[in-house]
Image (tube, rainbow over all chains, first blue to last red; front, side):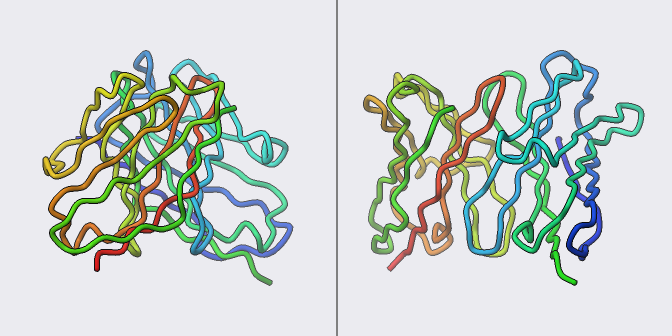
Length: 119
Length: 111
């Protein structure tokens, strides 16, 4: 069974850098084809994909946020870390990590963490 | 990159059926899409993926009241015998090696 759990600060100030951790079990990011992504959802709004990391260290980013995002995996800890720089109140959202099944499109979601950006 | 278009809202009566639509942008009309359900205050839940042929593969434990189909660039999610717990937001999603893309979501109200 695949599980994912996001962790990180619930409140950050404008201009600060946000660091979120996705801890997972049930698969290994050393296995060919595996990948984990980050998605966010502002309150009352749609889902927005942010970034993606593959088993082979390939990284992909949303074009609109690429300059502010970094995704990294730590295979020894079964974790994926997302950093977002220069946080702004418009970045207030629930941040989810998710794993895509290697053999089909199935997505396993974490429960999400609500991050509020406010001074 | 692909664009997914969904109607913002839909409604149907308890016990009836409803079909939700997700439309792929023209150049991407052969893409596989996934449907996700998000009940209020909860994380999304993967429901199924649907290919251009209309074949679909469901997630674990999904009731057979949920089915999928395709026509051209449109991908459909049909829910039969609507239950109160089906009231939720439904997002479609597509992906390739470079990106994941979500539609704007359809809020389903069960009357």
